Amino acid sequence: MAASKRRSILFTILRVAIGIGLAAYAIVYILRHAGVDLAGAFGQCKWGLIALGFLFYAVLLVMTIVRWYILLIVQDIRLRAISLVQLTMIGIFWSGVIPGTVTGDFVKMYYVARRAGEKTSAAVLTIVLDRLVGLMGLFVVASVSVLLALDFIRTAPDHLQLAVGIITGGSVCGLASVIAIAFREQLQRLPGVRHLIEFGARVLPEKVTGIIERMSEALDLYRTKPRAVVLALLFSVIGHSAFAMTVYCIGKAFGEEIISVAMYFVTVQVANCVASIPLTPAGLGSRDLVISLFFTELGADGAKAAIVAVGLSLVIVSWTAIACVFWILSRRHGEGEGPDGSNSKAEGGATPS
Image (cartoon, rainbow, N blue to C red):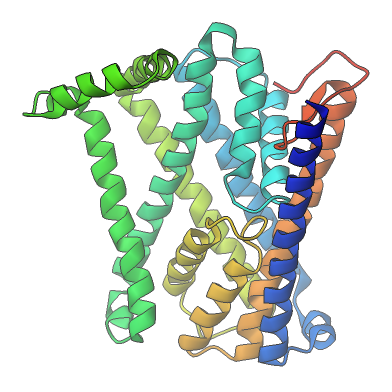
C-alpha cells in the first residue's frame, strides 16, 4: 500500500514537473520569437486595465460558483456559500498545478462524494454536468462571435478557418448531445437502441450498471427543471464572456489596437479548447501559443500579441496562487487530499463542503 502511494505521488510530481516545463518552454519561446522587451512592455502598460482584466477573471470564477450552486440545488444538495467558494477554488488550484483543465473536477468529486451520503452519485453528476454546461456556454459564445466576425473569417488564412471550423463543429456536437439527453426516452424507443441497452446491462458489472442507473435517475431531475439548466447555461455564457473581456483588457493595457472585440472572443474560445488538452497546468503555454498565433495572423504586432498572451497567463497564475491559499486552509481546518490519492488529516474538524 505504501509503495503504491509513493508511486502515485512520484507520478503526480513527474506530471507537474513535465507540465510546468512544457508551459515555461512555450512561453519563453513565444517571447523570444516575438522579440518582446518585457521590462519595456510592463513599464508602459496601463495597470488600471490590467486590474480590470483581473476583476473580469473574478467574474468568471463567480459565475462558475453560481452555476454549480444551481445544479446542486436541483438535486437538493445544499452547501454553505463559503464551502462552495472554497471547494471551487481548491479545484482551480489543482487544475493550475497538474496538466489538464479538468483536473480540479476530480478533486471536487472526491470532496463532494465524501459529504453527500446517499446522494453521492447525484453530487458527482452535478460536477460532470457543470463541466458540460460550461462547454455549452463556450460553444454559445464562440458561435455568436463567429457569426459577428463571419465576413472577416471568410477571408482569413486556411489554418485559422480550420480552427474556427472545429469550434463550430464542437457546437453542433454539443447541441446534439443536449438533444439526446432531453429526448432520451424517445431515443430509447428507436430500433436497436433498447437491445443495445439490454446488452450493456448483461455484460457490464453490476456495480457499473448501478452507478449508471443512479446517474440516470439524478439526470431525470434536470429534465423536469429546464429553467434551472437554462439559468446555469446563462451564467456559463456570462463567465466565458468575462474571460474574453479579461484578454481584451490586457490587450488594451499593452496598446493592442488592431484586433476587433469579436475576434478577441473567437480567439479566446479557440484557445480555451486547445488549453483543455492535458499537456500543461491550466493550459499555460498552449493557450498563449494559440492567442499569439491568432493575433499575429489577424495583423497585430508580434511582440504585442505575445505579451497579451503572457499577460493572461500571469493573471491565471495569480488566481491559482490565491486558490492555493484556499487549499492550504482546507488542509489546516479539515481533510485535504490531492489528486494523487494521498490523504492528510488536519487539526480541526471543519471541512470545506
